[in-house]
Length: 272
Ligand code: NAD
Image (cartoon, rainbow, N blue to C red; front, side, top):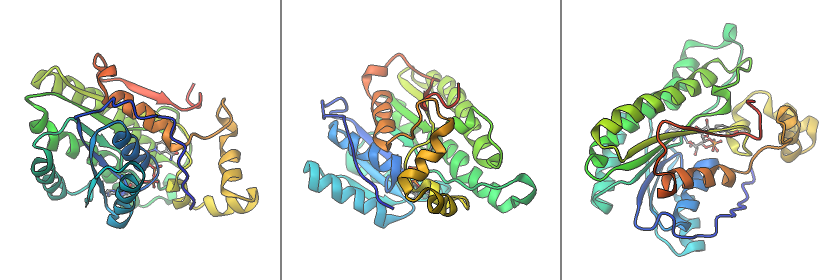
């Protein structure tokens, strides 16, 4: 799966001096977020369940921007892995300013054919992980504040068939974001919690779905496949991952300092 990079963020030091942890940083949107954060001056800890992919992102950042970005293997569904990530952050920079709960999976199928195991896996990776992440970093952000950004989806706003676990989980991520925003503001008014709801984005996430290979075959190429899927998006296209990363940079930066509990919908009009 070819992953290109069309970053329009030019590196204006919006995140200078900040320390960030990004989950699922080895691919797609997470990879674009890590790159954008590094370009904007943040120190990034890249985490992914697939260490090789996290290392590849780290190498790119080093080779292209001459910046070091550490990476570790981390399963976002494991509380022990969260505790380990927090120790790594503490040893690297003593503080954490930004957490991006980005890692996610897509599994689809009609409810009647969807197994309980598949349901539980999707909910654990896409929703329980966000709960664990917020819980894990709250102590680190208690004294100096911070920005937590959760990756929701337009699928959590607009119902589509065959996405019961994915859509319900993403809708719950939006609500969890608002609940956490209220709770974190009680701990420190400068801990902000927001979500981003992308519409279709051109990433490898799509290829895990059974319809992907036949669709690409019919369309003739991956790009044409994305274009076919984008027909019910008013802007008639899918986003590049970098377009979502730019939204995340905004939420991570002080430019959004009076935003908490918000959901930034970036979906080309899909959920209108
Ligand atoms: P992707 O498949 O390109 O990347 C997801 C990354 O998460 C991979 O590197 C994978 O190894 C990692 N991951 C999977 N399970 C993990 C686990 N248990 N622990 C740690 N890491 C794990 O997908 P993407 O499209 O970049 O998706 C990123 C986020 O954006 C997801 O939460 C997804 O639901 C959301 N999203 C994607 C789209 C889209 O169209 N691609 C749209 C809306 C929302």
